[in-house]
Image 1: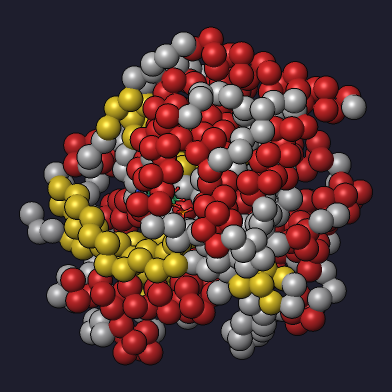
Image 2: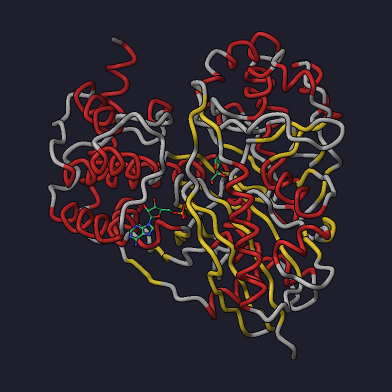
Length: 506
Ligand code: ADP
Ligand code: LRH
């Protein structure tokens, strides 16, 4: 059988990459054509994505992918981080640089939303975890601004990149679910929510589903990339986490997953949403997945905490917002030192929104330890150990809560994403969960993106289990068995819970 080649454009908060996947029924290999930094820019006090620089990275990556494949790509798929968007004028002009979800413009927006629609009703209608930066809060914060007032159309980030490549607007469903404007039962717009909040749904172009056609490359894009044939863009799970969940190499239905990169997204794949009040209180989200699935998960602060610490230690400058580009030797040395540091000496709540914003991360971690009456980490190794122990504990809690709230059981935990390279985090997660962890692939989002394209092109067939079986048989994976004294994790969890109760009562 003929081999097909696909380009996955995968933009994460830490870096963007264009990856070529070569696919045949029993074969799947990846080649990283191009990787480029994603450095946000603070402009007049507001944190923005440098969207044109990212778009240029995409063009450079597609050019490299075309060279690598001898101009034989079958299609392109695009996935990025969620919730953020660009606003366009009627002629397609971008009206303002997209604002970064870590910007503080949404402060106070949740209260305004709650006044129009109580949190209970909002959750019952959308099933989305409260995060201060969800698209609805951003739209409320943007009300009355010149860009919003002039806007004719809103495109989520992957849809914006796709529009620039093809000229064809659309709103891909898995990512649309993160706007908090989709009803997870109907998988269509939650019109009553939009009406209650005064959000104009006609800003959004029509919904697209993974596997739908999303146009072909424009002439000017062909010229920029050196591609010489009409190349289609295929809608994939355009939310990077949706593609990453496709990229989980599970071989059993009773698996949990943790997509670890800038964020840790930990939970289960379900076939129906859980919209109970208990689920809302536990801050679980029901994002939509590929093939009619629901991604029932919790956002955990993730390796962002470590990246931000490294940035502070490396630059000594907490005033700029550049993504930490720690060399891998920095990180390797730090992780070795952290592995030798005292385990579970202090733990913080890795779900705490206090860690969302950039700057002063080591100080914020130290403060959290102090407030909860625990030893304050002094050295980078101690702080790193505190972050990794805290992430492992948050992973365990998310998986415990997800199983309880959904009535499912779990026999194995899959870790995918850049955190797969962090062997200490993988082992600590196995220890904390008391379950075997299968780590890999690191580029799960790109793989999920490629697999949906490959199935659409007819290069492979089957549902998610068949796609995952192909991953399992072709991708390098590493298994971690739980070790150590499991009760130490129970005690650390109890310590943190008690400290939080005391703090809340104080
Ligand atoms: P995103 O998709 O959000 O941009 P990634 O999935 O690329 O994030 O993961 C980035 C993270 O992976 C980094 O912050 C770093 O902590 C971790 N990572 C990447 N490479 C290594 C490595 N060689 N050793 C340890 N950790 C690594
Ligand atoms: C991970 C991610 C996550 C979202 C966040 C904004 O890259 O897409 O799923 O919650 O970024």
